[in-house]
Image 1 (tube, rainbow, N blue to C red):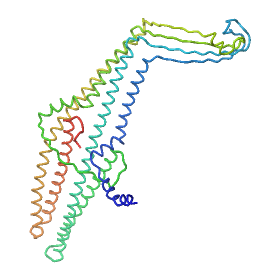
Image 2 (image 1 turned 45 degrees about the vertical axis):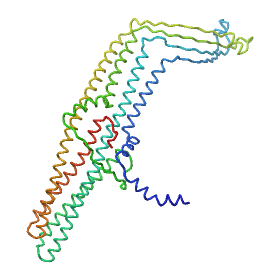
Image 3 (image 1 turned 90 degrees about the horizontal axis):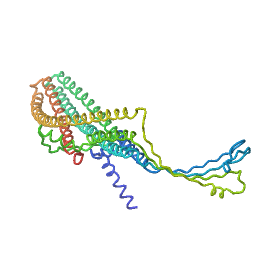
Image 4 (image 1 turned 60 degrees about the vertical axis):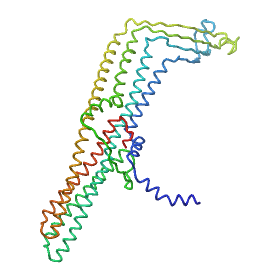
Length: 436
């Protein structure tokens, strides 16, 4: 009972703790629920199953067979090989095996190809997860940014409300005209409209993030803020980052493994031009109802027979199908090489752009912060003049609009910079360890 009461008392705190999601927790939900990543996982499982199927072809083929027939009219007695004209039943049992000994290394090359395709699919699964994680991180940062913009818009509304209240008192006291009050109320209406727009943007960003991790939207869930990271990089580092990324990025590994698989496909196709050798064996026995002298099991024992065969197949003319299949495989290998080159190019361009954006966003964020500080001081002066009756509403509205725009730019630059820091850290490491 005491444990129950303790749990009941802690329940509000537990539910409150669960109402905040971190970026790492969102990634865990992405792995669990994202259908695009699940599709990549299924492709990897299919490649694994295909490899097991190919390996199974090396194993001996063992079978057991049974035949049961009812013969009517003129036929051959299976026991005496004489012609008879009667109704009789025939039952045969047999077992055998077939072992491929040599097929021009066809199966061995198919297995090597299957191993590469399986490894390529596994790397591709990781690549899909990385792509979805980048999109998730962008959505997560967008939620934080739109929330900050909503809070800034709310502050603008509160500031305008205070100004409306202050000017209203001045109008009642007769120190200013009522036209100023109407103009300040118009500014308040503009701020309210901007707040409604910011709220809609925030809700849209939250919905997109919930859909990315494939869980039901919950207004009670909050997302943990991100801290800045120490990222110092110059344009010259882009080449070093790209060279390191070539060795670790799953997109590159997957494309390279896929390209390599075609060389073994060519070898397995060419194996059709080589002789093949196989070993076969079988044992059979039968029972015929025409022999009434022996019962079922004795007749099976009396009729047992077997064979052992070694089969050699030497291809002479194969309808010229091997050559075009080899040509097709070589074209596919060149296509895979082109895909690998494109993947390398896209990765290099993405890293170059990430380095450029990080430096640009750092400068932009610093400039935006300075702009906010200057316009905050300027707005404070205009607001003081308005309260003293020596500034008009146009100057006030213009200063307020400029400050709101600067605050929005600073907020957006801040979160773009945080996003770019994490993205570049991912490019430098080749994994997400410590990025979140």
